[in-house]
Amino acid sequence: MVRMTMTFLVMVILFLGGVLVGLNQASQGMIKMRGYESETFQEAVQTRHVDTGKVEVKVLGQDFQQVSVDAKQKKYEELQSSHGIQKVAVTLEKSVQWMYNQMIMVVYQFVQVFF
Image (cartoon, rainbow, N blue to C red; front, side, top):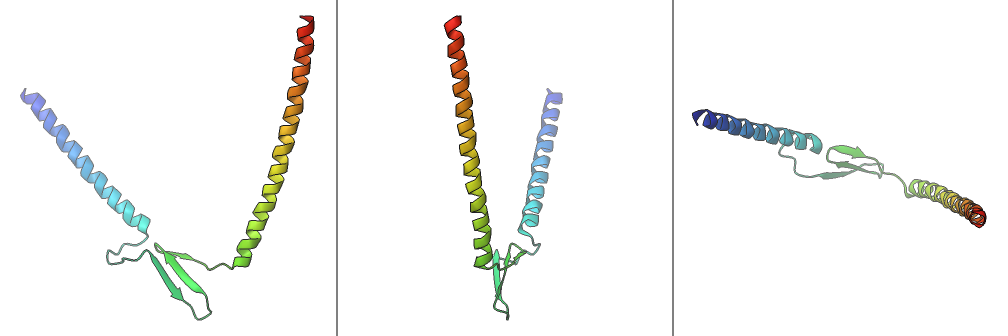
């Protein structure tokens, strides 16, 4: 009985120690994910206007550049054009698959007549 109690207490101590180590690791991971070590820093997004007319933005300590709408529009149009090609490819695939299935059905019906 004493041996079982001692084993149980050791297991409880190891479990609680593991929980404490895990909580510490999670806390350190959150600090790394935030991107800063200071506890006094409270804002997630910081903006600053530069003399050139652009805006500098920091989100969780990472810098982001200001991109013009024209560049984004051009990228969007390129994606849309490739999307159209993808639609044509899907339509072609479905038509070839339909023709193949029809050929198989005709051959199957022909074999059914003789057997």
